Image 1: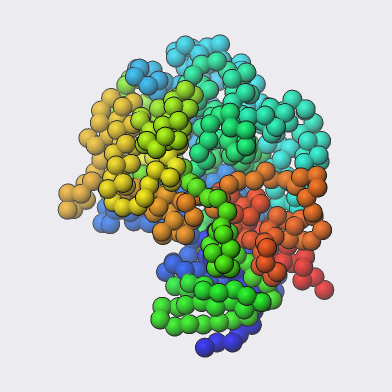
Image 2: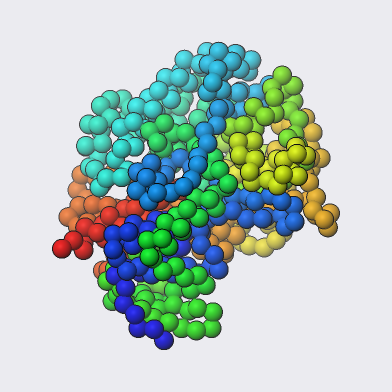
Length: 516
């Protein structure tokens, strides 16, 4: 049994843990990283979801917006992120038209608004996102700095109406004041409901917090495609950590952390090591359980379905190229009223019908995830991510997964000109290439409590007026109830999404605490 002592032990080998390990090893610290799974990357991995088919998919997380250029440059990450021309396409449920938002053609976008009867909302849409853009430009530069006070953030935004409408009042009020069409309102609201079970008018403002994180990335709110899949991002971070000298170990389940001593199980063996500082890059709820505390609330609200298709499906709107419609975010049954109905259905214990969801097609922007044979055949991947599907609807088991998968596929088919099953490829055994991951799968495989992809409820990315900011851990938003343990994952103050910010903030706090 080893009795080695390290400057830092990082628990969790997802992209945040790898980020912390890389920064600290580059700063000359001795670093040991322990990952429970047999591979690194956590939720930021690529996988051959359909063995033998030649498609290397981003299995869990799939787009990048919140990863700062500073982290990429600091660590010398060799990754490529591609911008998508089309923002979104949203078919009118039961109709033959849809709203196509084209970054490259404002006139075509305005014509699309007109085609669905929402011509009067063009100006309101532009104004709404113009205000969101001003919010992003003020907030984005702060994410790589210590937490600011709420008053400082408001001063930087410089517009009391933006602060009120986006940060102090339920998001639904701003949406309803800004645009009138049910579908247009729904498209806006979706950014507030990613793995967040909420109504537009909830007074806890969780929908506002979620919306904020989905529109500030890079100061623009754009969501980019990682070339090679999400595994390319975690792979680059792994390389940076290894090259800097960090020791990265897999198949190591941590069984205890106390007084700077970390214990873990590696297959059938027990091991232990000391640490000057422990960085917890797994979910805070897992730490709470390990320390004998009651974990805080954590509930995801999504089902993710990966598909491999022989071709893109046909649209009801024949004048729109499927490559354009699927080139951005494809919204399914996500009208404003439909999202509220789905919320109320789920509150009452029902699976929403129709299931609100959105689609992303990686292979249109980056075909490299497909084999040359699949590329030549015209095959494509689709990722479907549902909304308003809280973990409370599940108790576990294959039957529930199949039921939710059926609801997602039926919802998708309802807005297409053909059943989605008609274009799903089958593997060598004749099994359809469809992979579904529920909140229970995320909890079981990734140890995300409640299947929450953010590890818990999101928090505003600033400190309140009376919040203590005396220690480095407090200033960087990574403090825990345990001396010698810092949060370094998605559950830290600003760590959600594929941002690396949880690991970056924990590393910065650690370096401040250990300065000579």
